[in-house]
Length: 394
Length: 240
Image (cartoon, rainbow over the protein chains, first blue to last red):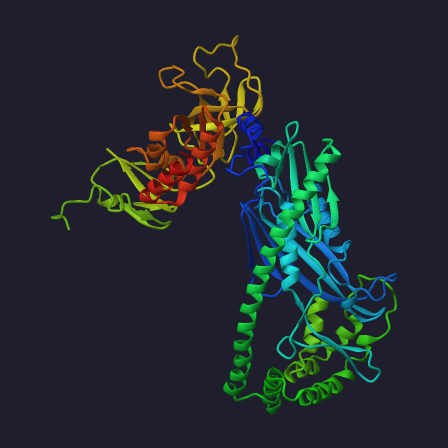
């Protein structure tokens, strides 16, 4: 018991009183006015679909991954989108490792409602084979430091990660044109998601009797009587609304909050867009280098097969977009080689469980058993299988 | 070897040291006693460092390591700002940012008897002195100085308390007065209490002054004295 007393963060009576009394004269402890937002910084990781957002002291990392799964039975031609939150005890001693806290669940739900139920991400474009294969997009939000207002920071992190995420391109092949072929990023440029609009969360805190502040800090959250998170986009459409805490609110106050939130949402949207744009230009510059590297490897490694040099040429041709048909021929050749081994990969689903594995496990075992073939597959540049295998495991 | 004057002091004094550094070789010291403080450890004849920081020496024979951290390791004689967590029959439980809660005996106040035990609700801020800090035991506080006088210790009312690192607290308490406090003190009137556990309390007549002073101190953590001076001047220009 004593150990727990030592490890929890607590607030003094002095701080509580000061925060409340200073707000009476429209002052906040970090020098902001009631309707000022803290400084927002958006950074991106080296991989596509990873973002790091700092909002004052708050630090959140977003990570987006994709996987091929069976769709839900009632929506056979729509992909899925899910949000997971991870509260590390490093961020705040009050977070416990393991079981998600009530706040962790609430945060996930607010983000999920804002993004999914407003149909911000086009899920129909995530369909590969209707009723059989769709892309499942998973957003992981890691709270690295809790400085207050996790909702807004996490929402921005999720959006930034979604905007920079790219899923591998896939085509249908095989004899019956029902087999899914994943193309590795070196061969075909991965595709970005289609995002219709950006729902931005703006949080208000009610402190004292009728003091209202935007973007509360950790200290203000400890004092506040109630909170209100409004998720809306630049068109002024309200996508989600959450008001926890018991404090009652006047209708006029809600309307005032909505007006302020729509202004803030505009600011944040433009910030996200500029950050994503600069990331994309940087990425495009890197791409040129990446392709150059692959060619260099081909030349440098003497033990490589002639086929790989062909591969290199293919990439060049794609890059210059001169003769796409040549590349397609190579692609088709590989598909045929693969198709006889991976026949059951596209086999009809025996059940409609949307969470079943991406790859038939029997098939996988068979493949692993005949290790020789497995390695043969890898060496013959056909990386598709590896990618599938990867997806199903993660 | 014997002809050379034997080193009686470490050559590392006031220099940054890292764990593993040997600061003194006892075999070369002629019957001299030394006292080791936090961050130092004796391995046979060698005094080694176990914590990164700056080696400090005080005459005649005390050595210790100073570093900046967010967690406070209690040391006897430090003045700290603590938050009352719980009240028991004999002790107040006080959070001092340490590895364990500290005990403040209910009688450790000036003229304290069983009849006039002070009433502190949870969350009360108090200024106290560490009197016991043994490993494996809860540290003990006291609101009296060595002669039994209250001497500014005790309950702190109003104002605003914020948390920083132990290094910042030490900088604020150093003499000559650090540039931030000196610069702010020339133009503004405010009260300040600094605990060596990284807690700082500020009070002033106007709330805006408290906010300004608190933020100036928090920002000065990673600044050099010259930068601190410039920052304070800019701040004061903007206010006036």
